[in-house]
Length: 346
Ligand SMILES: *Cc1c(COP(=O)(O)O)cnc(C)c1O
Image (cartoon, rainbow, N blue to C red):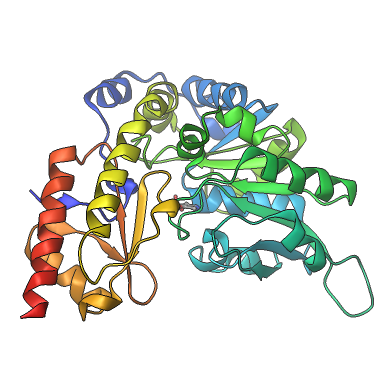
């Protein structure tokens, strides 16, 4: 069996989820008559402390709808330069929402108001005004770092003072909550909309939630239909989503401990550079330049040894821990790295 550290999206539904799927009560969700979807939306809203929620097939759709409900064509969306919405969503913010990104580089992956403030544009004769500020929490490509609540709140307060809404790509907001020692609701308190994934560390087979005001969700429902996300007996998926939401956040700390184990092991291997401060959750990004291998070469050699992982930017590799990899498998993966690296040196 391959040890799969490519992503937490590879997690398969638990036996309890499969049983819930088999027994799910369903209806037509385009008519809002699927009781299981309705229950999932209600629970997601309650848990995140918002008025309403919308069940969407993917995180990309959740972000696209979140961006679209807040903005108008020809506006700018401020985000961190490695943001998922900018780099990994096929430019949907341009293609569908009609906006351009105003990326700002935050070396530690935590975008702060003092960096955002000079980039905020009010309407003028030459430039696109800022329509939205986006925060990715945790920040995937920055190594899964969590943005602290006071940083989120300052951005929200300052943005709202200027009439600018804030969307959070909280694909892994429950990992952020574990790292910060708070609830997802605390993190989301001042944010206008949040997208989070059921299909990653929470283990559901598919689905994401968008949460926010009732008005935003009613508007978002129409965009979901336009995007082809108006599913019918979606309670089949929502049944697994409910278990993901209620039961799985409590075990994410195990994934974080495994990521720490990997990170500390990697730090001791010659030729590998890793910023241990960036390893706060279940993502481990490290540089392999000193090993004499390119990232694709490293990934290929790991695969020959039974470990799947992915290249993240030039010279960098990403490991993601999740409930389908055990601590022992992480140890085995470390041994594979040691072997791959030592064989280059000869
Ligand atoms: C995975 C992810 C998404 C959504 O991805 P989908 O594959 O569309 O579900 C959004 N943002 C971040 C940061 C992610 O890691």
